[in-house]
Amino acid sequence: MTWMDEVNEIERRRLRALELGGEERIRRQHEAGRLTIRERLEALLDKDSFVEIGALAGEGSGENFIPSGYVGGLGRIDGRDVAVGGEDFTVRGGSERDGRTKVHLLVHMANDFKIPLVLLHDGAGGNIENTIRRGYMQIPTWLNAAGEVDLTAKVPVVAGIMGTVAGGPASRSMLSHWSVMPKHSADFFIAGPPVVKRAVGLDITKKELGGSDVHVHVSGAVDNEGEDELDCFRQIREFLSYMPRNAWELPPYQEPTDTPDRKDEGLLSIIPKNRRHPYDMRSLIRMVVDDGVMFELKPSHGKCLITAFARLDGHVVGVLANNPMFQGGALDGPGADKQVRFMELCDQFHIPIVYFVDVPGFMVGPDAERSGALRRGMRAFWMTYSITVPLLQVIVRRCYGVGSATTSRTDRMNLRIAWPSAEFGGIPIEGGVDAAFRRVIQEAPDPDAKRLEIEETITRLRSPFLTAEALGVEDVFDPRETRPTLIRLLEAAQKVREYDLGPKSRPGVRP
Amino acid sequence: MSIEEIKSETAGSVWKLLVAVDDVVKSGDVIMLVELMKMEIPIVSPTNGRIVEIVVAETMSLSSNQLVATIAVDEGSAQQ
Image 1: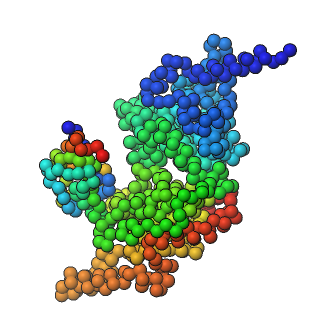
Image 2: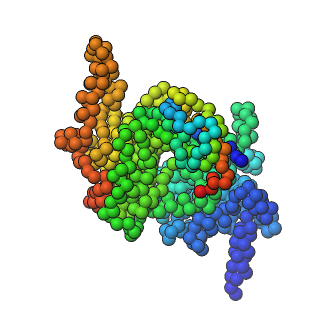
């Protein structure tokens, strides 16, 4: 006697699970320009690394068996384990039945094994049919909500918005560290067009309501955009290549192919001598980091600030940089929000930060006031003062106002390195002079000449050399020395991160 | 021949128009400068082509992502 009959039955049932919701529904999924969950997992994960859990789950039996609307398990990305899964849209639109479901199992797996969680969302969550089946209305209950919130302190959580994602799955995708959606084939919203029609009386398409144009480019709810699903998977692998497996480990070191003492000549001329002329900050960053490679998070939102992962001599660094091409780099609400999230992410996973500063201050004007730019800006300031990872500052040009105080910490070593093009100040000379010397200017025989005279006097004090003489800035140096200097400093700072491992708690109340 | 929109990524005010209607421009050519926070931020042509319409004037204020001009794409040399 053997158990061979039963073993064959397992195999038969597994094969049934591979058929998903059937040929017709798979065809429709493909027609929408979308892959099935099994195709997605195959494209995302290392070859043959997927170990499925719960493949036998489903409903009905025999010929009437329908697999569950979720496929999940353990997989590998670049040789590292991840808990991974996603809704199967070909089965009941990816909605799962009530109770403990596979996604909850994956959350526990990520927590118990301390491995990243990658969820490929494609579903609208609750299905009203369930209410009829259940026979009573239910208070919305998020099983293991505390566990999912807590998970963001422990392991990297990635959300792929792959299909039509609404309700519960859309909400869950926001409990991630980073999210990505394809340009054309996915939609993302709190509730879809039929609910919107009944609730606010608006006829609107899925695309208008929540395509990537809305959520990557306007709301910023989703961080990055992929050309298609395959590009999203490439980006997910890239994001994770900068992340440690969990908050108790350091980010992955990679044998560098660039030399630490490389000095890019372009750095000597990238900042125009004309103070009104901007330049390409992304080019500047590429000249400094290993092989000119960086992975930008949220490139289409909060554009006054650039946030990116890169490597310096093989070690992961988080790069923040003001973008002079967008409103002169002035920090506005969306930019400040972006800084808060990125700094917190770097801090949680022990990634040292390099801040390339060219900021005229917080954004000013009626739009800035109405959008709460100061509260949001001070939240960025608050975050700067709550992180414990090493923070280095390179002042490449403007460093003005309280907006610039979000870029370094005066309570720590506060090593600020300035380029010869650097200029600093509490408030700008232009305008600042009018405010402080109003009476003197008004009472002068030639007010314009008087204003110019005062402005010129102060302009002569703008040299970073004068500030350096007073140790008002820690050092001024050749821009070409930026890379070797940062590498040397970070080399000394690597060890300290080992004393600070594990999840971090934040003090106080954010502005 | 397709018409493409040129938008200003940044908010600001139009500082200088550097092209006129019917001018032929190359991809990357600066077509106007937008001033904000004492910075002259260039708007560059996304393609080779001929300027069809300029819908802004100097000193006009712009919001982020506002349309500033349209360009008829030179299909022959637009591919880079």
